[in-house]
Image (tube, rainbow, N blue to C red; front, side, top):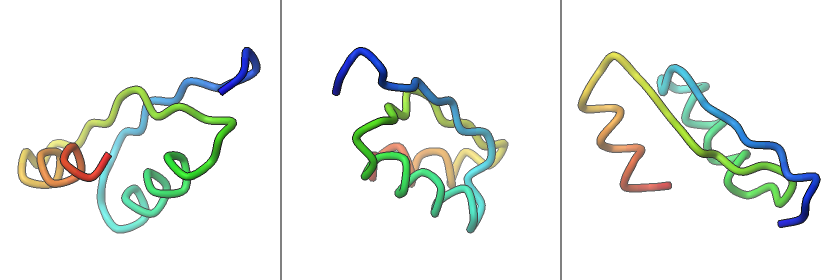
Length: 50
């Protein structure tokens, strides 16, 4: 977590959005700050994972 870390907001947590979220959280150059999905069920499910 250095000063060159990129802050990210992810919109859409469907199948590919969930894959992106996992990849972003596993990469040290990125910080996943925000996620959003119109489906409250998906948003809640992914909030618990991150």
